[in-house]
Length: 338
Image (cartoon, rainbow, N blue to C red):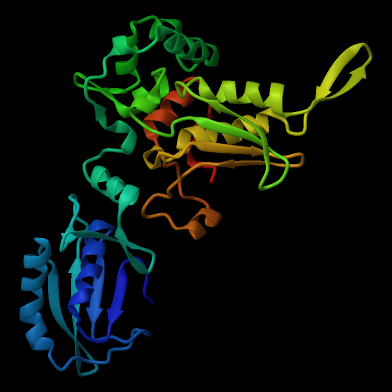
């Protein structure tokens, strides 16, 4: 049956060059022309002509060479076009396509950025930021990280007893003389200078249409989750008081560990390219956390339910820094809040 690596067509149309482009940008695949939707060979009357025509079309429109073969089954001819996965991004008439599952999708926006960067071993958070220097950061943000990293025992005192510039290099947040985008979000006091929407908006809602009050939590990402938690538990949640002996106990509507994990996932794995902040909507009986998020190109939603995908953090440099400060466990890097 048709899948991520196999496509069947009864006859040739030039629009099927998009399928070839999609295979080249994904994991490669085979396009067989002369088979019906059930995979049975229906045959081609112009197979010999296509055998000569298609290699030239593929080469001139996409600049790649595909293996085009004339095949025979039960006396009927069909064409098998074998496409290998390419290390560089391939376009067809200025547009980029990607094979996902049994469909071919045109890529735009962030998915296209991810494809182009990924072909060269880059991620969105690993892009260099021009004219940003270590001296542009407030020192207190680095000190917050140093304290948490040492307490977590994932870094030693001697690991963090270095200059801020050396710490950025140790965390792989530099490239040559350039500081990377992840560092600007993690440690700079005003990350919105480089990335709009890199803050958290909290609101208390009476219903879906009426908001009673709200807050915005801005600043370096490494400090944002703690400040979000403090704001919610001091201003938005009502603690029910009871006493165990002479000890006062405040019982809140949601355990701190549960909410902290959700907030951290939203901050770490957000698609920061969209310009939209993280939204936390608090009601009397529920909390809704929303962040923009994109699944990896080769991961379909149904695959998430099957498990066994492995760790593929959306922002690996940001995730690694939070991991070093023990804000997230290693396995939690596969999660997201959507």
